[in-house]
Amino acid sequence: MMYRLYCRSYQGVMKMASYVLPWREPELLEGENSLIKLPKLIKNQKIECILIITDKGIVAAGLMGGLLKGLRDEGIKFVVYDKTVPNTPIENIEEAAQIYRENNCQGIVAFGGGSSIDCAKIAAARIVRPNKSIPQMKGVLKILKKLPPLFAIPTTAGTGAEATLAAVCSDPNTYEKYPLMDTSLIPSYAVLDPSLTVKLPPHITAATGMDALTHAVEAFIGRSNTKKTKQWSIDAIKLIFENLYEAYTNGNNITARKNMQKAAYLAGMAFTRAYVGYVHAIAHTLGGFYNTPHGLANAIILPYVLEYYGGTVHTPLAKLADLVGVSKPTDTNEQKAKKFIQAIRDLNDRMEIPRKVNGIIDRDIPIMVERALKESNPLYPVPRILYEEDISQLFYKIKE
Image (cartoon, rainbow, N blue to C red; front, side, top):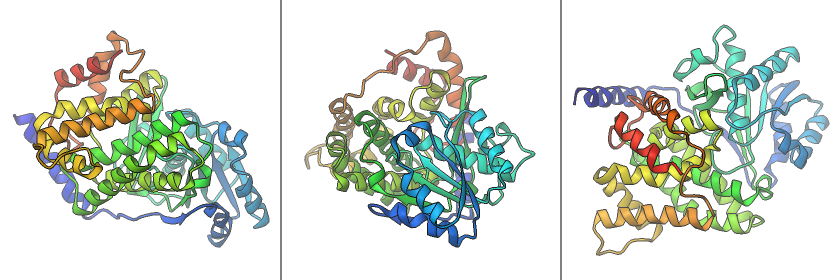
């Protein structure tokens, strides 16, 4: 009882503090081929040399060709760091920050999925906080300094990293994966160009789309949401249920791709203010231990955690069941909630997302439980406070 009171008190303080934080939204370039407008915008910022953080897959796919030509045409020098890998290891971040310093760059373009954007955010933090290690910036409001201009160009529709105050990294030496959260990490600009996502493989479309859904749902059912974050979540969830499967089956549908990008952005806006919950805490530990792709982990874990919350989420999930059209007027809130959870499972099944996580080792579970709890309690304003035994049960439920 006392621990629950402590958690709720902490969350109440954080919610009150959020009203005085310097929130801002990135300036948006939206629509098909909107990327071509970015070089001129960078030029207008008086930037002479910029670091581009991406991954080898993006380079091989030739997605950056138009951007690089535009930068050359505007007379802007650029350096490309393309070693970003999933789960954003600390060494990637330090390498990128060093390249920024060596080339006297004045801004950063993050071009890719969530890992590239997270790498760019934390590299920017290391640039303005050279005497603070990345582990020292772990947690909430440990940066508190303006970053160099940061331009986020998502090539997936899932993480919402282009809108959030969060960045996640991993330490391969300790098998940790943890978030940094600071309003300074919100990018200056974001480019939502759906043409960059049409070549995404179906399995990545599925996993990243379910990542966005998890953001929106966890924000919606949490206890620190506001009228504005609830609406962002509702809009995102509706867009995802209407467009994700179409984007999965017909990747060239530019309207579905555009709507999924918008959904990911709105979900990012929602959770960056209303937080996430135990789904993310468990997914982060799986990423740290086994490099489980984050979106895939969220997709699998989400229905199990929603079921585990029980009656504490029946009312909000009933509203979502009504929203996506899976309920009947005569259903009770409990029946509606169960139908919404089943709708998530059905969507996963249609996109061939497994129902269990492969490769979890029993001896790792106690330390993963400890780390998941350390991340989530007392910070995340979840519908129901869970304890060691609860998180342990959830790990065994998701384990193949």
